[in-house]
Image (tube, rainbow, N blue to C red; front, side, top):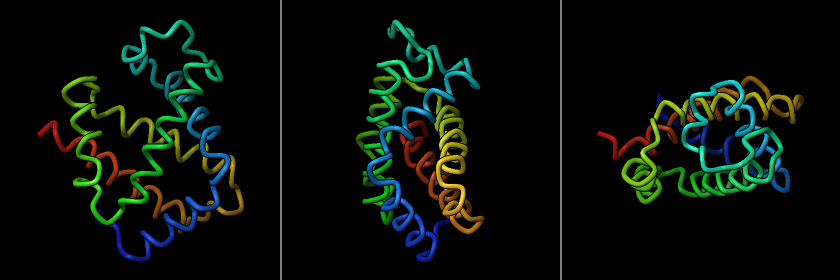
Length: 143
């Protein structure tokens, strides 16, 4: 599933709406992933508190959302634009790429809860396609 120019425009416009709530959304999505997909906790075993809303979850949620914002900015060349991040996750952190899909799912849930009116089926589809493309780009160095 590739992103059309319309999809890209929808993602950019919706990302602009997220604005000041990005850190909160990232923390909520990451906290949900750690609860719903407990196998993802293995990558964060060095954190003292893995519970939703904890300081490490909030901090990493902010980092994740900065990465998503970077991806939105590089939406026309995700694989090239996210090469360094792909290498980090593949070679240094050794994150199972299945976790990118799990986090994307949690991200969609949080967006639907946070923006019940704005998160229309059309926005849902475009953001879902974008997150799938983002996950593929992050998985690039695993191949």
